[in-house]
Image 1 (cartoon, one colour):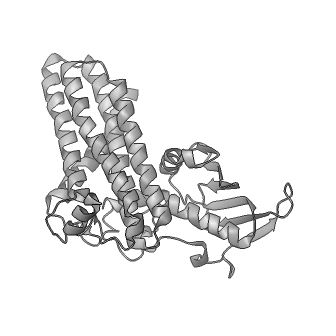
Image 2 (image 1 turned 60 degrees about the vertical axis):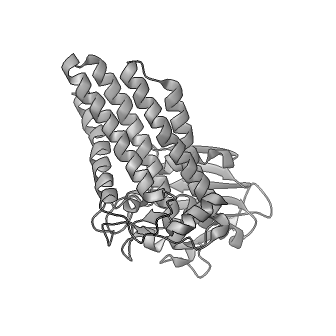
Length: 332
């Protein structure tokens, strides 16, 4: 309760305000889709394998192009796998299959969804709408073409209407504890990043246990944020949950990059080692500033972030993008 009151005095967590047509501003529900019939599902038929149950199928876009970012979809579903009786997700095949609440759901990269073993048409629509909430972060935005998690951090200039994140008042406080637990898990991971840096400064061997702890906390963060998104009824709150997922994913990307740098450092000349150590400390310090800027439960009342938060996010974006460059250099 104390944590909630602290957040209340600040006003709430911070999130970027996005343009009206951005996927984060619109969200998506089956009943809103162009081309759907009045009940929201393109095709419903009886299940051949189970009497009294139905199968529903819907395609969300007509063009032959991706609707989802599969890397992010698989991250989300893997983080939420404890809620599924079974789950498989393949970035290579562009499909995910899961068993959730006795319904089998298929999710395709091109925007096709199937649900089997639903009790009725209404039950199928309800199931698919719940899935839509869980995977919103992986949906590609029609404005900028980036997944919603990128829009959430203001990475695409086309989508966000103000360079400074603003305080978002939680509309439904009943599910706020889920968000708070997610933020706490993220903060724990950030604290452990300092332990990671200290270990790497004193030893060259990669700390598998610390990495494992951080990854577990970051996946817990994503899971709490997805539960928060599932329970909320407001798009503003949904945006906060997606922002939390986006920041946790950034931390996972930094962790991947950190491991790669450590491997390179072993083979680097001694004179570069000190510089690389400084860079490592700086990266995690910037990351900590981002987390505190967006989610700190400070008593200070604000309406928007100061200039440090967007600047830190921009730096982190450049750093995590360099991961691809490092891998390319490695291949050559």
